[in-house]
Figure 1 (cartoon, helix red, strand yellow):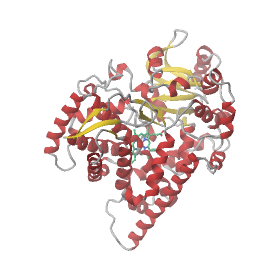
Figure 2 (cartoon, protein in one colour):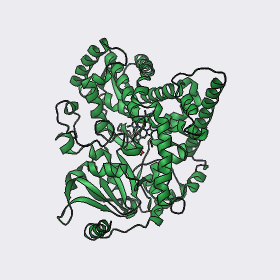
Figure 3 (cartoon, helix red, strand yellow):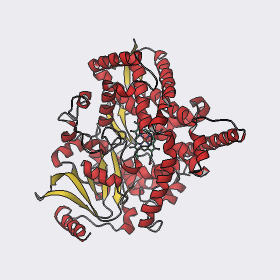
Figure 4 (tube, protein in one colour):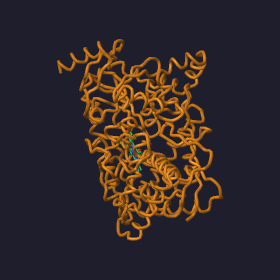
Length: 548
Ligand code: HEM
């Protein structure tokens, strides 16, 4: 450890001239993360920020966040910085905060698997407010001096996460997910009918996909159709999706300032009568009611001796691995985590198919011959073009292109490849000081030329078939990508999402042809999720869809 501290001091002197050691005790006050943005408008801070002289002062306060989060197309600046500075570099967050951008695979793997790095910032707060402290995504505990000691954080809380994850995993193993195939096929059929009945002209496929993916999770995991969820639930869900997809410089600054607020203040803030908070409060209320209803029904069925075969919630209740409150807390995260992420992935896939009609045609041929011989679990995993397409979309459009972490103590992270520092020195490991903010640059990692090929910014599914992609270490669970993250918090539903995407794409491409709507430029933007946005700033993928 001695040498690592020496290296830290050396690194700090040479490369972080003015870098400040943030004491763990004060980490929270520096938790001014802006990597994920939600439209909370804290009135006091908003007023204060609006009083900043427009233009330069605001841009100065935003640091590099302006370019990182507000560029016309996600990655315009970030991918250029990576080209200029390599896979690890320093940048300025809001109000002069030092941030380390990390896209090196070994460094990412180390951080994701280390208890010394915890999630921080608005994303974390949002998850706690929406789903509660018992939900699997929040069981890590928020790092607050006085609340929790460092050893407690890494041992007790890690144990709780492991226990809940293990119990929840029963519905997301490869075998369990295969049983959802019929549900996905039914969802894809409903979607096809909706497309057939849509008026002629271009159709924005995003709202239909959002409903389809909500339907898939609800049917597969809860055994409820969207009708069973109720109109109120579905309408509020549409609102949640809408309010989550906005962003501005003021919002980023407000969030940067308020991300360090204690949770009790945030919870109290949830009572404010703003539109956003009302929608979020309703989501919590409705998911809580829904969860209680499900548990009541399952308990009643058990009392009456009714068999509930392959029912996820009956299994959770029977297993005794989670308390009732813990089970209730998982309903919201399950419904929300897999909805927009999956819907946007399918929307980007259809968009790229519309942009590449030749590939679309070849894929259609593959689907027709594979589905003609379909047996049992279906041929989805053995369709090369389909899977190359899904991997390529997942690479280019990760739902979460950035994730923020803070270091709980001084440590060293190794690099897969040496980097050259500002002083010309070559280093193969980076000393990290406690309190350092680290951004996991997921989208940048997925555009590293040595790993994915020279044309990393192009849509080229063939890279997955012709040996261009280098095997490398297993960083994430799927195709070495980090779109489903990695480490203990790897997406619980990644297999579910892949099968759902396979089934929906197969049905749609076999029945319809997709072409771009003229004159519309669609770009990926990061508004909580990476999403397709049209020139008006709205989330949309308008396509000409023709029944074959
Ligand atoms: C293309 C679709 C999807 C993508 C790209 C995706 C991505 C992610 C990512 C990046 C995380 C980590 C978030 C973090 O810890 O900061 C995550 C976590 C999670 N995802 Fe997904 N997800 C997808 C679909 C799904 C589906 C369909 C479900 C469930 C049915 C699901 C359930 C979850 C849950 C429960 C977690 C929390 C896991 C934990 O903290 O242990 N996801 N997902």
